[in-house]
Amino acid sequence: MGEEFLWRGVMLPRQEIAFGKYAWLIHGFGWGLFHIAFGWQLLITLIPIIFIQSYIVQKTKNSWVGVIMHGGLNGPSFIAICFGLI
Image (cartoon, rainbow, N blue to C red; front, side, top):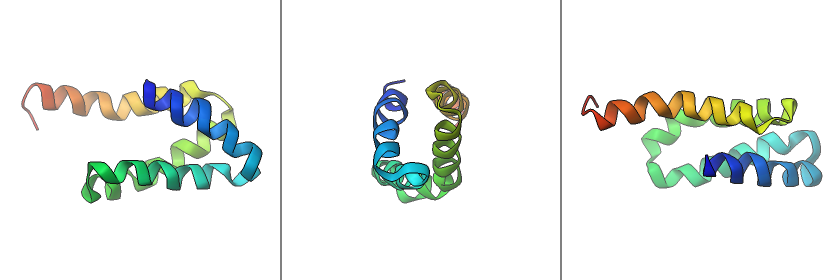
């Protein structure tokens, strides 16, 4: 929730002021750089969703879309890791 608040709730609207309709692209690159810390393998897996999520949130102007997408992708993985399935 905190990551979504910071990236989609605070940073993306400010990037829209600076970059206009291309803010989602700049935002996606920044979010990708943030995820480098988690390993390049994860980053390669996330490349499509990094840009898709930024684009959808910018077009809908609704951060909750990002929260639902992020939770929908991370939630099942987190549960699987907790139960030792991964």
